[in-house]
Image 1 (cartoon, rainbow, N blue to C red):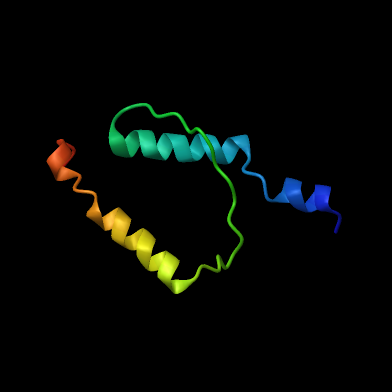
Image 2: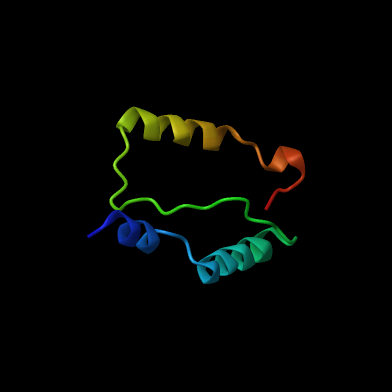
Length: 70
């Protein structure tokens, strides 16, 4: 498979972006704008330490403190 064909098959389609935007808008209750999106290869191979670092950062966000509590 040439690089152009593989690159185009991995792009996020406008339809997918609109579905994601609609879902996030519904969840947050306000219109959002997607600035960028990219496909990740499956299975997404990430070092365990990097994955745990991301988990730590994401769980450190206190959403209720910012007035967005669920």
